[in-house]
Length: 160
Image (cartoon, rainbow, N blue to C red):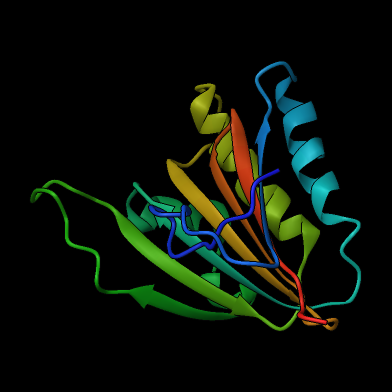
């Protein structure tokens, strides 16, 4: 395990006390085992009181809403506007969803769609998921699912 500060999703390299970074490699697991393993890493965290999903989509909004339904039903939705497309055909858009609670079924839906895309299965969406969790014990967790091969887990622990 490594101790790093997590500045943003591109630069988790500065050391800070009380932070743990773990990389989970899932290459040897079946598709279903990958999803179950990722969800299993979240189950020990009791007392979660809020969740923030940051989802990068490389799909049209019509396809996303057709598969996921009304995003407003998941929590407070904010479309991130500071993303600069690489070209005029770039369909990338970012959604930040803040929820008062963490729902395993929501994450399972997102991971299934993302992992299906990597295996050319349907239904699928081209996307990346960041999940930020905050517990009643003041510990904070970030999960960065980079694709079906694995994810990074960051933990900030409350100072004693």
